[in-house]
Image (cartoon, rainbow, N blue to C red):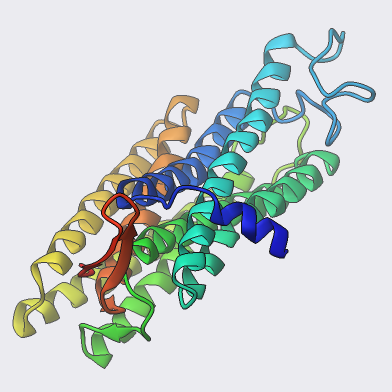
Length: 325
């Protein structure tokens, strides 16, 4: 690894703008691949490429086939190609973090977070292969989505890691508020998991012949909605405490964004149910899920600090201390 580290050391030191750009690109890529996956599902293109890692046996690309429409093949194949884009973004994050650690060896947490990006791409590729080879079983699709949710969360943490120090976290809120924030994250995780069961029992399985979850969708939808209510109640209690005890402007900004995104997502889900889950709204709901994760993760990060971050600019040839938000 020493020879590889020496190669990385020859790269230009990433500016703060580049660091931020790579991390934001990781958030967009990890969330976006989930959205494009939903497009594959609602268009019934999940088995447009019936094998993995090849599209068809003996070919990495779509081929003329009497059993598979050309359009569905290219929709599924296009989603696979996007994995390569996500992988490139992940590699850029690792190189940037690695280059920073070479300059500042104590930045180990930053590098560990950066490595979760390509690690996640590899894991998602394997999960995607299992999903295809098992004929799009609903629970494999659910695992695929939930893995994306975790990676979106980690990408937000990575963005903050580029802009904060490496000291142990110091919380800006009290223990009770920390407990409420933990409850909020747990409620969000349960909400996302419940949403995958609604999808599993719903009409959009990715292929007309895919077996669906044998459970009453009305009950699953009720549970999903109830968990959203729990999430919003915890969020409301947290806000009431901050009104009484006070909170920073940064916390209030991110708190407000969480409310806006969560309410919009809830309203969209209600419209979907009322209209019978039209295909055109499914991908927007998946996008909304990613935005809820991003907003919640940003609120979590704003509630603690890790000291100032030291950035180094080769052009100025001197260290610059930048206070973390």
